[in-house]
Length: 259
Ligand code: DGL
Image (cartoon, rainbow, N blue to C red; front, side, top):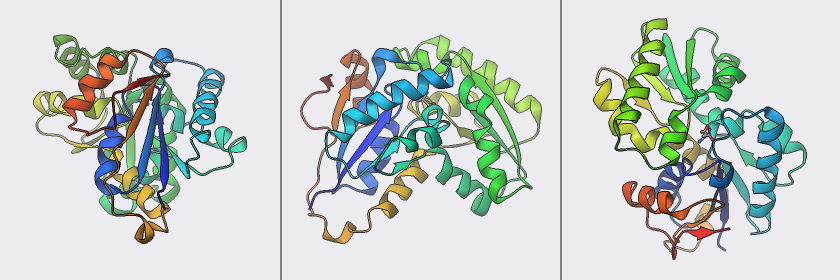
């Protein structure tokens, strides 16, 4: 039996989750939807984010998936509202990394860089403090970084400039060794973060979401031992998707589809 996993994001960012998922669970069929036609979500109201996400969930549910990885921190901030009208499990990208930080890494202080919405929602401090109130959590929002990456401008100076500006504000808040890339678009330019701030260890929540997805599949042993390639849909332009699929070295089925 082939398990189908839906993966959704506002755009190309969730491909960083597809990258980790297809390594962690190569036998599952990943069906991805990136809502690039409506990206970025990160500066929108909660009501708008809920309405847009519900449409994507409906599209994925028609593909008969078993559960959905919300490969977007911004959408994960409204997961409780989305669960009310969804009949299959939704996996947050924030919860697994928050659990890792609170119970395994247990840093004195941790920084989170993310969209404005994710920082304002306080989802990271809330989830970490639910398990460990000793960790000092500070955050910094960027209104433009996800959008720059979405437009495929990840080789330009503008990306480095925005990373330097927002990371400097984050690091000024307190001393820290690790920073969470709290927007799934950001690991696409992990090389830029590491180049600008080599003293910091950057944490990619996709790794912990992929592990959570693997645990979700209780029937993993009965899966066919096939390597199934992800199927990628977007409501926007396919060009940036193709560029990032190549950059992340993801082997996909057919071409990126416009839907
Ligand atoms: N990739 C999304 C996230 O993880 C945000 C991008 C956007 O603003 O739409 O938050």
